[in-house]
Length: 194
Image (cartoon, rainbow, N blue to C red; front, side, top):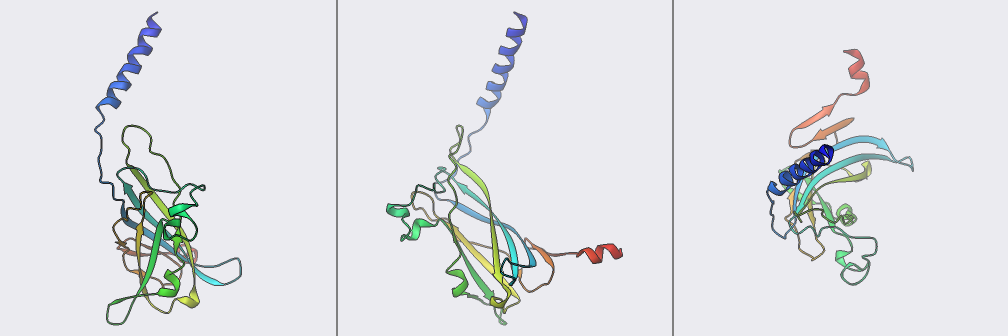
């Protein structure tokens, strides 16, 4: 009998803690934030020299309706619709005067589908970290610095803010990490010498 009372007390205690959790609230428009990017010189499956990038973004959607299922392929989400994809990237290069200019050929192909995950619990907002893996052939990159712009659409076709990355030193060799502070990751040979 005592064991059942203790179990009940523990369940009530946990319920009380969760009941006191403050509900967070965000607007229905999705918000995107650039976090960081890793870049590395590498060779792709076709033996092309490429710059492999892992781009990290944070996304918040107040009503939790961000993302698409595989079945979402008709109506607004048909393959011919702009909304078939819900994550868009554009690439700008920094010219010698410090102005940014669109790399149109590259930007036209940077569209992705974020999968849908239904929010769980009382808070219906959705917070997610998105990682985009991207290989850019070195032949495309004739500039020292690029910058990405990102935006998303939710299932109700609300467009997020347009978020910009930090300056990305695309032509540094080796492995580079950028989040506003650029760090060159030491290569293995460099670390062996120390």
